[in-house]
Amino acid sequence: MDIVEKRFDIQVATKGQTVTGKFELDKTVKVIKGIKVTSDREDLLFYRGTQKIEINGKERFEDNYESKNLQSSLNVDLNHRYKDMRDTDPGNGIVVITYIDNQHPLYAFTPYRVSLYVQYEV
Image 1 (cartoon, rainbow, N blue to C red):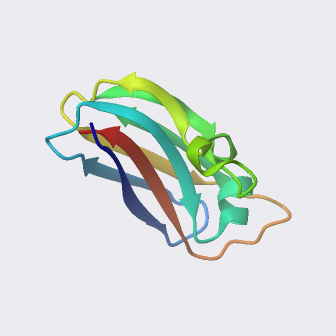
Image 2 (cartoon, rainbow, N blue to C red; image 1 turned 90 degrees about the vertical axis):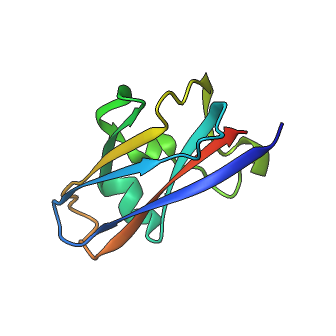
């Protein structure tokens, strides 16, 4: 049993933009162990970001789920930075993230990258 972490990126180019990324996991995936969301602008992700995440056509995190709930800080032990997905069946291996940049009065928009990490067992 090997644990693999794979990163999928989407780019947020304009304020208020909704960006959808559709990604395919390796065919050797047995179960999805965890997920996390990061960014090259953690502050914008924390304050401006919401998303919906689907795995195998099933909604795992509903519309407007706040990104801050899927982020982790450096204060968290390295082995505990993923949201536990309780060995989710990957099914067809398709992961879809629909990310929305939301207006925030304290954080002006600048283009940024959002990364979805998927931790899985092969």
